[in-house]
Image (tube, rainbow over all chains, first blue to last red; front, side, top):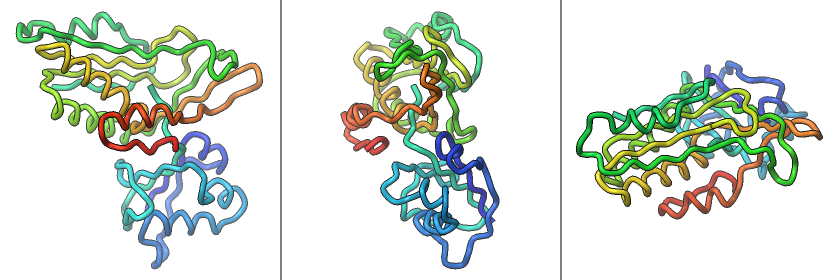
Length: 84
Length: 157
């Protein structure tokens, strides 16, 4: 299982702030997880589409498409940050 | 020992500055920055602003930024306080205070921390305007500001 979190506009677009997901065997990177979630279609396909400005963190560290993920990880998807 | 706090309550900027140098005769310079909520953004009146963050990651990201600043410049201590929740124009949002022996290092470290905070710390602003609520877009100029410190920024672009 991985824990997936969604923040800000992405959370609103998806109507979900968190979920637990059993990782399919072929999903071992951030990019693969994003594709897996997009395959749900609808808001998921639209909000996570390639070209959308999206940032990802794995276990609280900024990550990129190639960052590996494994069971037990916490993965967060969110828009570019706007604090300060 | 750096202080990093995320809180909904307002902070006392003067008290934060005083605390950072209290009883330390080696401090010759204290640089501080206070970010404030404005009543206009992108040409529209802003009534209130709500800041969301990623509990757990926020503290870790800020600690990493402060550690990097303290490794790059000879500064003695740093305080970062960032508010979350609802704020209105004129409210304080964030304060960064850096104490060091000399102003050059204190100024540089303070600006570096703010530039990195803007592009790497997981905060998001939502504004309430007369046309309804909207999420604030990240600015490429903030990436440019962070890139001045040699590490390319890639938050907004």
